[in-house]
Image (tube, rainbow, N blue to C red; front, side, top):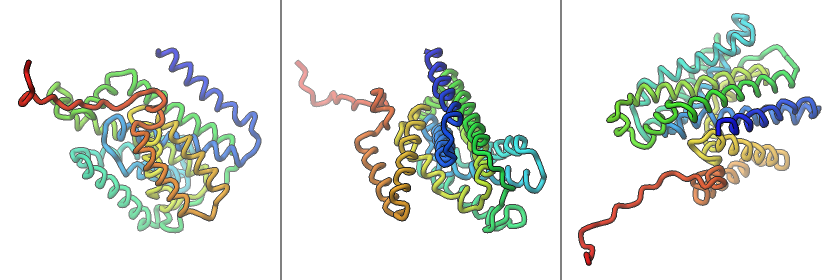
Length: 321
């Protein structure tokens, strides 16, 4: 089983690595690079949302913090790109630690609202700290026009992220602990687990690669502001992609990201002036998927479904032969 998984991993990412060698259209190379980024964001959100069962609406904050950390260190402290990128991931993980200590003691909608408030607070901080972040004017990188470089960097970050998450979530006891907390947190405590500690670890594991991807995106695009890298849409799309593809897996969010990003790209290519229509169509697709594909695309393809508890049979009132 492990060898088959490894073979698929090498085949997929090895094939993607050949794309710049056969595709010389810069536009489509940029599109594929962004698509790979969304695969990474959907997978990392699923660590806390699918495996742990805590719906976070603050994932975009980690992406934005990584982008701003990379930009500040490169433009103001003159750090090299690799060092600034690593620092962006670390700062995102530290933010997840600090935010997770109080918020991961909450459950359900309370946690979701708290993480949404975190993302909005980070956006406001970026707006008011103009001397550091540029405020509404944003931050601009010196032009570095090498789409192949950013393609391989983004591909490498997502490949390493997926490999690490696969090892931790599918081939180690850590993944089993997260699923135990998701299914019954009280029961997990009864068998000796420490849910709060494990949830914080999950939150940090979700945040760190998102911060790194934010740093790659910032340097690649060349300009960032609070409205771009700290926008609610970053989180919303990651959530939708993960849910559409199938929660609690690594393959599902990747499939959801590919399908929805391809839909978005083709939609904008044909109807670029109809933003409201795009949101309406996207909302309708999600509503239909929730009704007809409750376990996502991957669940429908594999027959994998969430465990459903059967109602206990009433004993009283039954006719006993």
